[in-house]
Amino acid sequence: MLKNTRLFLFIIILLPYQAGKLRAQNDAGFTPNGKPFALIFSNVNYKFNSSGHSSAFEITRSYLGYEYNFSKYISSKVTLDVADPGTGKLQMTAFLKNALVQFKKDNFSARFGMIGTDAFNLQEKIWGYRYIYKSFQDAYGLEPSADIGAALQYSPADFLSFDISVLNGEGYKKVQSDSTFKTTFGLRITPVKGFVVRVYYDFMNHNYNQATMALFAGYTGKDFKAGIEYNNQKNHGMLNGHDLSGISIYSSVALAKKFTVFARYDNLWSATLTGEPDPWNYGSDGQLFMAGFDYSPVKGVKIAPNYRGWSPADKSSSFTSMLALNFEVKF
Image 1 (cartoon, one colour):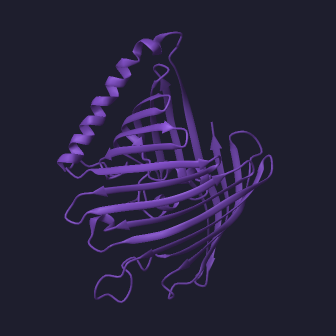
Image 2: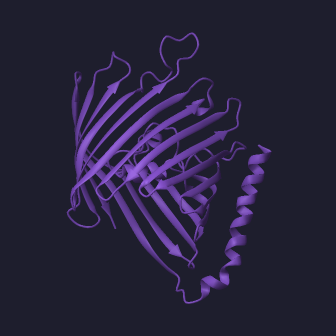
Image 3: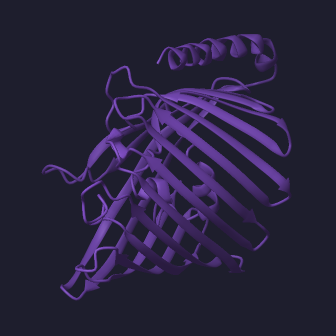
């Protein structure tokens, strides 16, 4: 805990130091500026299995925010995430997704506040279809996409970068004040153009320490993208023996300027506790099969007809299929 606190203080101290060091350079010929932004995810879907069928029209996410550049190197962002809370009687609830100050110059960047985490942002970028389905770690609750804390990223060479952060560990929906911090480390290597490898590790000290490891390899070409990742989390939720593991494989091919086809496969499994017949997460373990195409008629609008199939590990539950039409609006 003492090491985590020292690292957290070091990051906080470094931010204003770097900002002050370059203030004179920033002010020359720069006009502060800002802009609002919005990002909306919605879909209409039809779900069916041996038990029956259902249909729905959903607005799954609405991001509303404002970005402001104080100088060439110092900026800030505030984002509200309006979504279904998943509990209670409320249909939509607003969460503070981002409220941060960032310093970025050349091969160094630092962020402080309610920041986006580095756990799976590369995977999400190469997957490319967040408006249709979340990345593996996000979809199955291994890592939050944002949290309170501070983060540094440095790239000593074109082919190498590393990142480190100290976070509250609760995510942006459960902001609590406690003495349990999450410390993260990431390493990214680009051995050849288009190909990237990333190793990520984080841990939280508690009665039962939670530790997460992620290995990822991805390729981005002119008309083709692909990625494969393996994720493992020990003591999920800081509960002894509640281990989660899984793989995700995805790819996309651009067949025309505005038309791309994609496919994805996930497999999530969990450990079996001593004396138990089934894995602890048996009811939620399983395999995902997904395929579809993405079409962008105009800039800022995306449409994606797609199919999703879920094969549960619990064989007493039936295979579930979904036909969906997803939309993204960005401005």
